[in-house]
Length: 63
Image 1 (cartoon, rainbow, N blue to C red):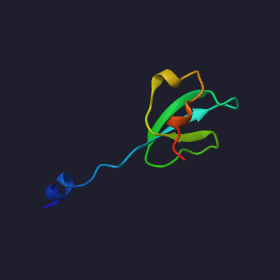
Image 2 (cartoon, helix red, strand yellow):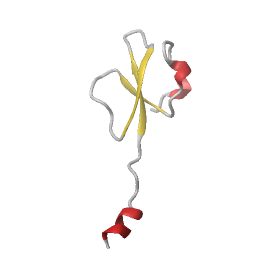
Image 3 (cartoon, helix red, strand yellow):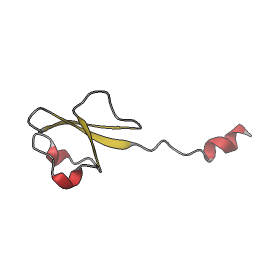
Image 4 (spheres, rainbow, N blue to C red):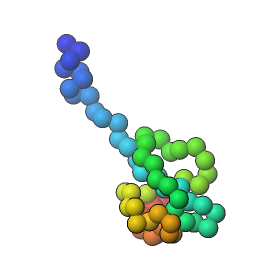
């Protein structure tokens, strides 16, 4: 019976975060269920590798 509960279990929903330095430049990305510890992580709607090393577009942030 446990097999059936595993099949219908929902996968954890991951949120996407970008690490910004003091000038607002993107330094790293992370996908996890909860916001990472630290004050410089901001939630973004998706990860785009072209943002690394540059400032995030305003439309990327989730408020």
